Length: 307
Image (spheres, one colour):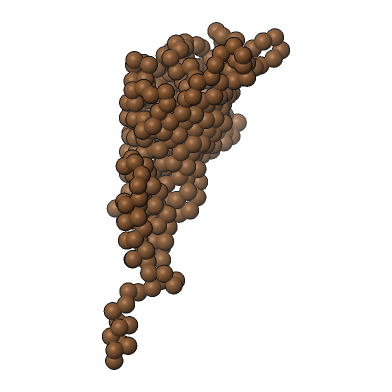
C-alpha cells in the first residue's frame, strides 16, 4: 500500500525526464544566473523556443521546423537588412558588396490564428576603393543575431538581438589607425501590409553594449511600393520603389536617408526569391562602423539577390 501511495504522488515522467520540473528549474536557473538583465531576456527568448520544441509531445498545436521563408519578410529598403548584393557608386570610385540571410528555425501556429517564428541572421558588408586595376578593401562590417517574430492578419512584428563589429581594411594600413567598433543591440520593428503592392513599417532600438561609448537610441521608418505584376516570358516582372529613414543618436544625431527605384524579377508570384536591379540614393552618415561619423552622399546602381 505504501508503495502504491508513493507511486501515485510521483510526477509523471516523459521519455525518462520529469518535464514539468525540468522547465521549472531551467527557468529558475535563467533568472538566478548572474548576467545583465537585458542578456537574461535574450536567453529567456531563446530558451522559450528551445523548450517549446518539445510541445508536440504534450500538445496538438502545430510546430514547423525550418519553414521555407520567415514570417517577417526582409525590409528590402533597409541598407543593413541581411541581404546579398553588389553596388557600384556612380559619383565615387567605390564599390560595395554584401552577403547575408535570415534562417527561420522554428515556427508555431496556435489556435488563435497568430503565427510565431524564431531564427537566426547573419550578414557581412564590405566597401572597396579603386586604384587603377586594383580594388583595395576599405572597411568591412559583420552582423550576427537572433530574432523572434509574430504575424497576425495584415501586421507582422520582429524583435532582434544583433551583434555588430566593424573593421578597417588593409588599404589604410600604415596611414590610419583602426578603432574598436562593436556592440549588441535590441531592436523591434512593426510592419503593416494592406496589399501586395504596399508595405509600411517602423522600428525602434537601443544599443545594450557599444564601443566606442555613444548615445544608444535609434529608430526607423520606411515604405515599399510595387507596381502591378507583368507576365514577362513566363516570369513575373514589376517595378518598385522604397524609402527608408533611420535616425541615430550616435555622433550627436543623424538622419540617414535611403531610396531605391528599380525592377523586381521572379519566376513565380508567390515566391520570395527574386532578382532586383535598382538606382540607389543615400544621404547621411556612413553605415560602416569605422566611418560612423563621416558624411556620406552617393548615387549607385545595385543588383540584389533576394533569397
